[in-house]
Length: 154
Image 1 (cartoon, helix red, strand yellow):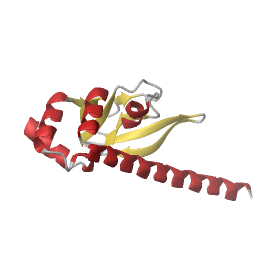
Image 2: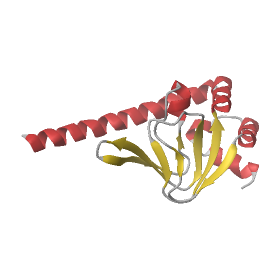
Image 3: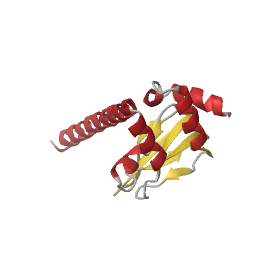
Image 4: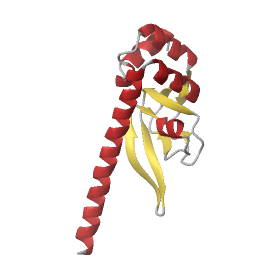
């Protein structure tokens, strides 16, 4: 995939839709293109967060460790991004990300990510929007699980 193709792919991601193409070209050039085979981990829950990943093609599962073993809590695909929580908050990875199919990504380092957010405040707003949506979705899932458990015990 060429830099121009990566820029076109980045334009399709809401997070980067309003960023000048020349800046996207710089970001594509400064990021690392990685391909993960099916079953390979991008990172593991508890690892230090050093980068976020933008999915150019393919799918991955989000897996959390539970007392009953690993649990798939979400799946992401083309035009999604993962890993931003650990680099925004300086906390260990909150989940494991495992390729569900061959997965083509752009690895955005913490430094590059923060430079982009500082240069483009609208990107920071979009990051907040995506994170808020994920929190809302997680809260809904937890409420459903709690209700299902309450129904079982009553």
